[in-house]
Image (tube, rainbow, N blue to C red):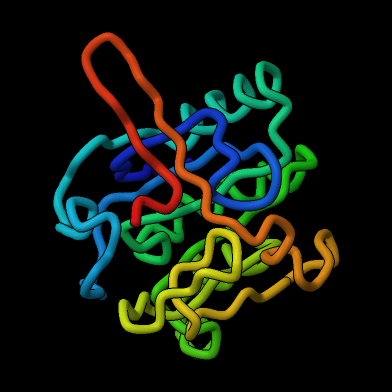
Length: 188
């Protein structure tokens, strides 16, 4: 098994894809999109290094505790950690969970890369949201999609076309603990 460099994890969210989801924000991105809602996750640095076996154990807990329907990989840039994420994605699908991946790369770019782990991650992805975030093309019509240039690609038959229009509203969640407040979803 491999490792992941994590920025944050949410055991259960309804703001990062369809249904209840386990969300992983990875650390590091080369795109540096102006207006990115996760600028602190762009720096390529060691943050929280976690064994993929431990991540899978957390997903099992979330599945039992919250009845999640899937996982979402967000960033940073998930494709920079495709080796570890492909292991997690393959396990998730074998356990009946869906996989959604946000990436600043275009699907065509990813398919043309000579990278076995990216190909493996794509093979175990149900929904891919591709393309860089473009601040001037802010998308207010689709759930969980940042800008109008980004495509929602269904790479399996698990979801119906148009799933990203289901609620037609932005969701923002707050998680309050003793010493912090975490916000996820659409903070604009």
